[in-house]
Length: 267
Image (cartoon, rainbow, N blue to C red; front, top):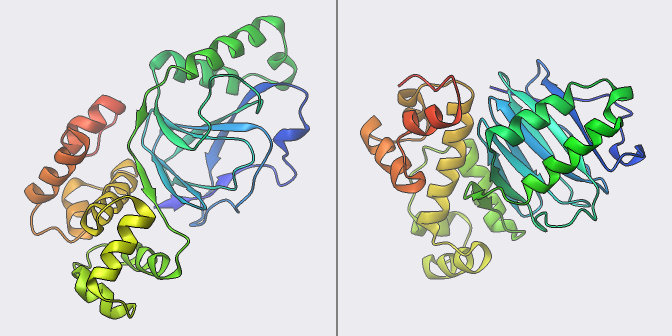
């Protein structure tokens, strides 16, 4: 379902003399993700088709179709693209004004999407032409106005919470209570509840639901049906899953993807 992003092995965005440039990235036919890395320039990962999950030390950001994740310069990260993914990277100078100082998922307007796609397809010699540099300036200015979407799963450095997060990602259908999880990690229910709230800012139930949203978007972006996604996540019925999805994101899965893409998932 997922593939790595295929970049030249010697690619270094910090070696360029341009302050803004874009490039297309194609998903490779292997179930892996790009190694964790960092660079001085800020980066927008834009999903034109499929989806991307961006991992940073403190969490996961999900990028559904026609959204992007902003990664400030210097932040260690890795990107994982669904096998059907078509992605563009936009690199921006770290001192560009008005851009977010923390990772976030951005809702991308058609104008920004087309500007990134256009610049990404330019041959290297044309990217620095005055007309294209003006387009890049307009693009970066537009990025400062993009609204954020709440598609973030905070992940603590605490080893027991990382253990629980890894287990839930491996088996999202696990419906163990917080008391049962407490026994698994040798903590009382009350202590674990306080730890989750302190480390993530969420209750345990809300944190697990946010993980389900991230995993659901991964699957739906890859073309998995709503019914199969509901089953994978352990919901008793499709309607129960749709209710959770709509309560969290304000729309049913079909409407959410219809608004994001020309190819919504099949219900």
